[in-house]
Length: 168
Image 1 (cartoon, helix red, strand yellow):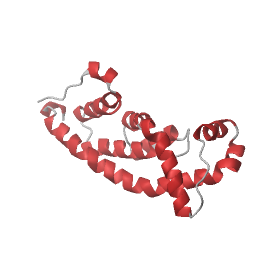
Image 2: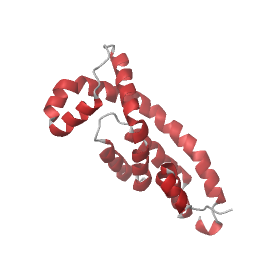
Image 3: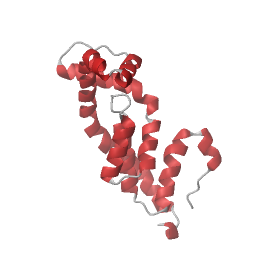
Image 4: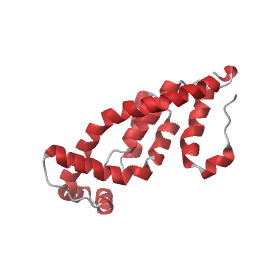
């Protein structure tokens, strides 16, 4: 059995386009399932960092620092956008609970606008909210990364085993 890339499906399925196909290409080029799994895990964790507008740079820096495939890391960043805002709010709420404070005000659109156009006002109005979001994320990320790594590793190893011997 060979690993087939199906270009027609990539337009219909963003998961396939941004994750499956790049991972399969990497496997057929000799990249280990462990490295690909790490790119998926780290990329997804950093993609959920609760400060809007920072995830692309965080993913790029981590990818370079850890020698991870930028396409896969940034692909995870793009895919995680689907769940970004609900999880950002959840991280803020977790941070609120951990800090023992009342629920923070969360207006993500206003927060993003202020961060982009008036960072000083953002810090004044939402600094505590941002800190609580980062606290919640910091508690979850060290658990998230190994869980995603292990969840991705098994299917990647199976895919690598199906790769043609000449491609490995």
